[in-house]
Length: 142
Image (cartoon, rainbow, N blue to C red; front, side):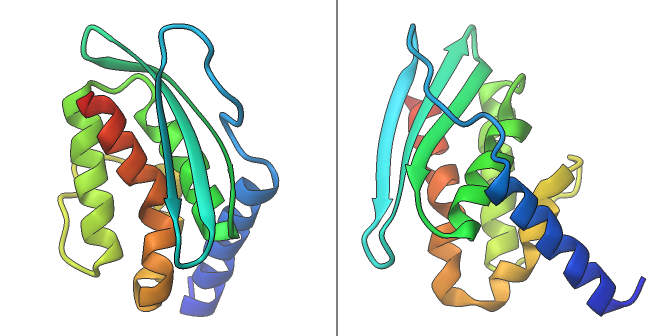
């Protein structure tokens, strides 16, 4: 597949998550709540996590922001559900390295998250992409 076709595929995955977000909403009972924002561009996220016995049972988000931040939140909630807290934190570390253009451990299937690789070429957008992940890290550590 040519670079242009791959780039177009990644863009369509990002836009699909933006227009049809997964896990949009809020958990009501026994949920950890994290509110974070990116003051440089106005992105904000309200993340709720249900963590039981060291496992992220459920994750939902709400908020507003650019297509990158909202798509990333959708993808993040999908990939961490059902994972042990340690695995979720490891995925956050992998994502952070991906955003910085660094080598990262490929032991996990990153699913749709791989579509965000290109963001590393736009330093101003990295904070948009990592906002939900930072919120999740904060939430699972509480």
